[in-house]
Image 1 (tube, rainbow, N blue to C red):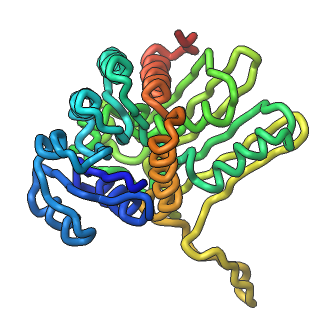
Image 2 (image 1 turned 30 degrees about the horizontal axis):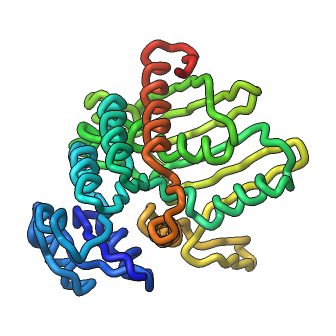
Length: 330
């Protein structure tokens, strides 16, 4: 079976998903829609698909699934529309910046028996997934502590910051999902600390650029997340899981994994410069997982509930910063 896709949004992340869909032998990119004709034309030219309107994709008989890569404030409306149209839906995070709107959207998905995957691509990274496999196999015993480091090479434009929902909903939300993925238990407490250390304009826009979060489960398991909008040395992505019998970790990845030693010392190539190259394999694997779930009728994961829980953690983190206290979740 070939799953026929429509792509909604031809921006930076739309290009990433166009490549992932087109590179899968069980998928076909049929059409792309974007408010900017030049962006849609570029993808159509690169991958041999048609440019159509969102309305045409919604009504199309030759499209089975859509990938939503449009601005965040359109996600929930588009999910509802395509759930009612009977299309399988892959949507980039978040479903919405408001938890109540997410709940209403997920109700429509449930009522229409829709299929929805939310784009937490890091679960599909082969290195991070291998750590989860080690946990499942019991090789490090019972999980006790998780450490997640996620630092961007540079801050986005302030105009983006203003509409992003803030660092916790935009950046840390990936790490909240990864923490849930690795802890094996739901967090019940959260403590968050944030500052403006990179660019004062980010603070003037009402956001932060540096953050540390501690999550705690009922049994006492802990996850520590550190974020920064500035890493002068590249895109810093690391995880470590400490258990009762040992530890498993996934280190930073490089485009070329070599080490050179000479009289000047040891050197290695720089890290990946951002998510588009660091997580290429993860983007391909999540589309593969989405297709497999469609074909086999399996439970889709991560799903809308995962998206909601990560957003609720982001909201609680912001509350913790504003109130200067540890927050009991739920």
